[in-house]
Length: 364
Image (cartoon, rainbow, N blue to C red; front, top):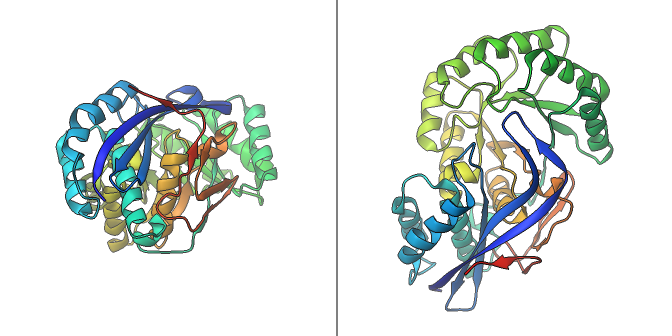
């Protein structure tokens, strides 16, 4: 099975409601879709969104990195030589993590198809069913409470609550949501780098003293502020998770050595694909540190790849934040991964099992 072509397309999917964080407001998902074709007639799929404020990637940079740099290096490569292809992808260009991730997951899709097995089995096996949380966008308190109750009614048992706009209001937001869903759902906070270290300690202590029990708080300070992250971790009971502070294996090792966080959030768009995600999971497993696997605001192609990784590494990836498809008004992708609100299952088709993508606009 040899790579003969790499094609690109754009896929736009409206959201059910606007997605609001401390960093941005988004109305729809817009993914660059990668299709890697082979001489056997098999095709592998990957995708990536533009996330300028987090990874620095925009659609133009993703498309150009793939067309101008990655594609010329990969044409003619044998899919069976997976490790060689991964080295080519990762060494071809600095950063550009989302472009690398999209191409790499398509290659992994083909590698699993080559051996006629679902991707998670090629990665190590596992039980092909996981449960995700759902994001509650930052908004007025009454709206956030209503959204939280609606999510619980849909069967979600864990809520990822966005904060980081105003410290005083944030505390009241969380108190109100906790009172509304106590005993029905766990709460994770995501401050999206919106607090200072001292603000985070103040807010979390206030919540802890008020009896609010949080499962974790995600990236309360700026990505570069590892000392601030460590400051918070040492002063609160709530587990602290590093997200934007941790892209690849090197950052994870630094965080572990500093004891700056309790949990690491793995995202394929940060790691540059599946290979580094697996390395991070293995590093964390060695140090008995839990991981979450999350996603940007992505459609079900790239999220499906993350689902396969989560199943294969379920011993260390104990928390799931793969709600991108659940936030969409509909899913235009037909694959062997079934997203049914909180429940995500994988079928028996080889690779990612993608058979159709409605509304895909191919790029020249």
